[in-house]
Length: 108
Image (cartoon, rainbow, N blue to C red; front, side):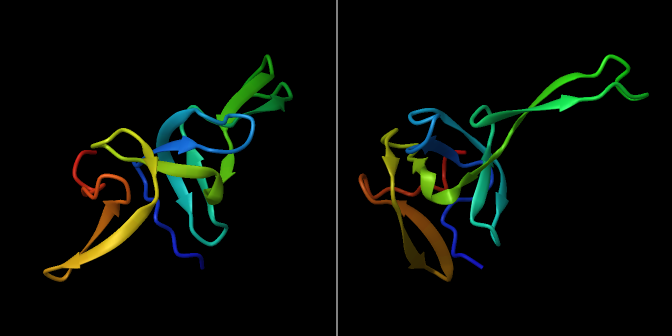
């Protein structure tokens, strides 16, 4: 299992790939694979055959997995993509922005 610094509902920016520069909210984190699903980013299409459920068939769009190394957390305080460091205070572990040294946990 990979140590992940990104959690569900974090605001992230894509830093590599076809959707570079886009931002979105993390919908799901796959820790064992080291991948995340970001809403509105990396949209894939799947063609559906006609069936009872969808008599017309059609094309379904859904957000696909992204590698966790291709996204960075956007700090809610300074609004910049940043790396995260940990600070342990009073038996709680906080994620801290490397740029402005404020907590990333607070404003969700």
